[in-house]
Image 1 (cartoon, rainbow, N blue to C red):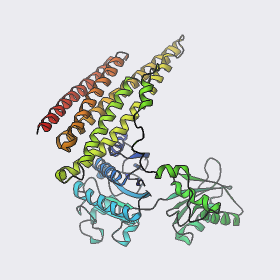
Image 2: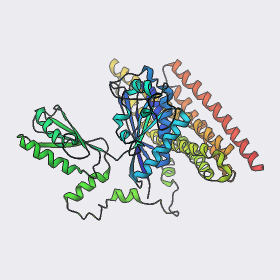
Image 3: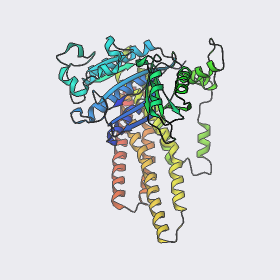
Image 4: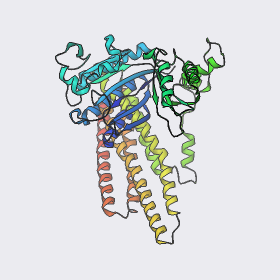
Length: 511
């Protein structure tokens, strides 16, 4: 069965988009799937939600913390939200094929790495807490960055689990394990917030309500109904239908009713499946066997299955202009990234290469991220072509129509330049990984790193032709020159890296 862990770290930055983008990019390059990025400028906070296998999630979380600590100075940070560091909190959540105990162990290893390699104080919280009082993240955040900085080195009760007992610009980080939670919002058929407050009190565990539920009354939304926001931290033990039943009884006692409900954000399928099973009185010893679950839990495809990309190759050879050269260049670079990752995978776990195992694990994660990113660029080829076609087909005649058409064409041309230029950028990144694989990877697979070098060189050269052919369509000549200079720089670097890889591979093959 596949193993999937969710992670939703919160970063103390929600206003500088370049910083947020750098953090997300660092996470994506580790081979995880980013599900959502949510920034709140007022609170100056961003949440990044991603999933993957335990090792990939651990690498991605570490990379996100490292990027945040590099670009965020907590001494200058302001925002309406409790926080203790550049990366405030890193929760690990077991989703598929992973136990809570395994997530707790994962949190411990991640926290130790952050503390040791990044020099940040790390506090374990939630199910991973080493002290009972630290199970609650609120206790860890007490005093926030400013308060913790003043006592971390003198108050033994505030000593970190890992890392130094002192705060630098990156502050501290809380790493923990928790169960999946659900935000279940009930909308009443009344605008009376007092009624919503009464329902919230009946639900909230702090006022004698249901276990594992914290609830707040919210003012009416656009539809006019007061709301009750219930955060259910253990929907497996406190099911959503129980929350609804209590809310319905309490609202009826005040002459109101629950009109509808919403689930905020992404919800584990098991929560809905369990609720449906109980409502339908399905046998408890047989969980609902949905098609989606069967696909998710299935093992890897049979080795004899045809994995060759015949459909894609046929599409390229068709009379359609897409997928075309840009897409083919991106796929070529993606294959190079896959080969670099394969060399790393064949190196990991080999006693002979123990001294480079950590570097190879990192390389493998970054290669996986690049592989996925390049495939997305391959798919974007048709989008850029369609935008240009649509722009050139816009009406012309009046001055307004001509201006609108020219502006649309200019934007489309920029998109047609940026896409292959991004292929070049990521192609160079891939070649750097291939170079590392050629130098330190398993000797038995060194030839594969050489092939990765050839593929990366071909991809960058091919994408450079697309950049050059589209730059001539820009009206802004200075902007065109900037694009040309960057493309020329990337091409030179790619050719140099490819030559280095070829030389290294042949020397290692000779022994």
